[in-house]
Amino acid sequence: MINDLEEDLRNGTWKDKKYSSIDLDLMPYLVKQANDKNKDLNLSLVNNPIDLPDAIKNKLNHCVDSSRFIIIGGKGGVHFSVVDCRKINDKIYLVLFESYNFNHSGVEFSMRRVVEEIIFQQESSDWHFSIMDMDIQRSRSECGIFSLAIAKKLHKDNEKLLKMHTENISGLTPDNGRFLSPTEVDRYLPVSCYKHTQSRIRLDLYLSKNKEAKNAIVNKKILILLPDSTKTYLLQVMQIIRGNPFQYTKKES
Image (cartoon, rainbow, N blue to C red; front, side, top):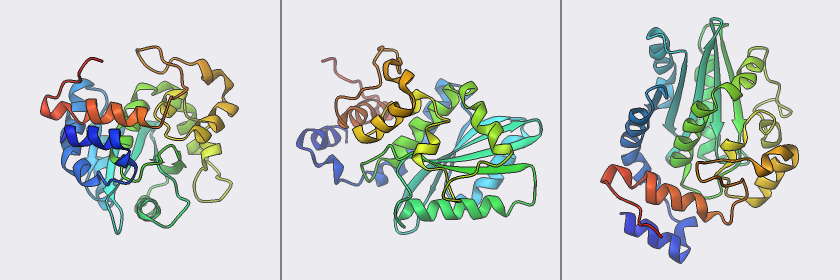
């Protein structure tokens, strides 16, 4: 499997390949692996959006005030999104993060509508829900791995995201009335959430609004947020993240 993925990267076919079925099989192992590495991550896999409220309530009933959920859904195809959940002063803040975008009526759009409807059906004034369109993904089938990476970043930068959640309590007001656009999202998310952006134009947009982020250290290798190519992220996830469940070791270059 790893050899096939690496070959896709070498010959340039990765942009048109569909890896969602692989993600579907591996995601339970990847979620378990992530939780094993960080006991405070509190990451859960939700196989159907309709099960999200119960999954959230289960965490709250076990006194877990900060948790994340990767949701599987999408009509006409497999799609993944991630929800960040915080309990602060007895209020529940929920934010859905979409790594692709909502500029069309595909599986991303249907996922958003389903989750939105399910959350709003909860008869509680203490639940506050917002949606963020990150628009950092360009490949058509990497939403699972992107969601996993975003979930980890949301936990790692837990304190930096408090502003996003506290403003959620008073109701974030998107310009389009439905969800926060990428330019609005950029006001809230730290630079680490853009580490794997697959579009230089999108990255430049973020940096134009967050100039201090241009020289920010985004990982242990002290790399700044200026990608050499859109393949950088795929090389990491295919060779490292996907490889771990099979005891795959990345070869030293």
